[in-house]
Length: 255
Image (cartoon, rainbow, N blue to C red; front, top):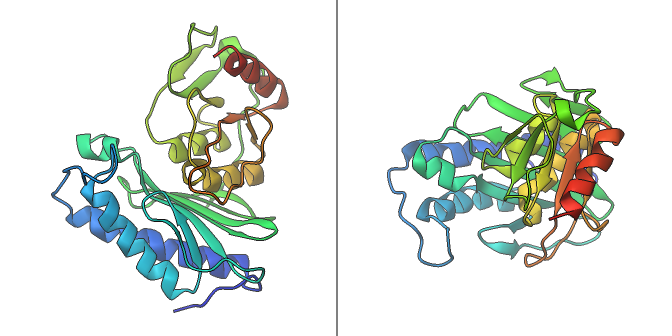
């Protein structure tokens, strides 16, 4: 197996991320058990099995991992790679048969993001990826966000519920943040607002995809989106254009 370090190419890093998502896919295809793990609220037993399969690949590649399920494992030094991972984002969707759940993986080094991959595990050929400076792609096609600047015409994805109904055109609450955010990068929806908070594993891969596609993603309070502590939470806001970003930031301020 390829051993990764800071000197590895972004493409070789992305290749290991794909191997990791494939390992999770095998677990999910075979899964018949949607019981809760009993270890953490809303954590399913399959979350742990998917995490174990992913860790086997990533640790075999010599990287540290920050995972929703297993917290921080491995060593992340100055010359190392760390993969921020949610092996199964949208596990409740998966448990209910809603075909919108993903494996989200973002490789970082001490200088920042290197490569990101979000695979819709309900549709195994459906994936979004990006490398720094290399663009963003959906199933091999370059992505671009919409040109929407008018909230009244916008379709806005949300996580959580606003206190009052904003004057957007329409909204969608799809239930898997990593995939939801990618839809903004791909021009399918125009913005996405987190009315709660999320762990870094939920949004970081998608943040790189947005960055490379030309969509805008910021943190509600202006904080860095890259965190290395399992307990830290952030509130990402995403929009297709600077004008729309300012509008949806104001909506989030009213929460």
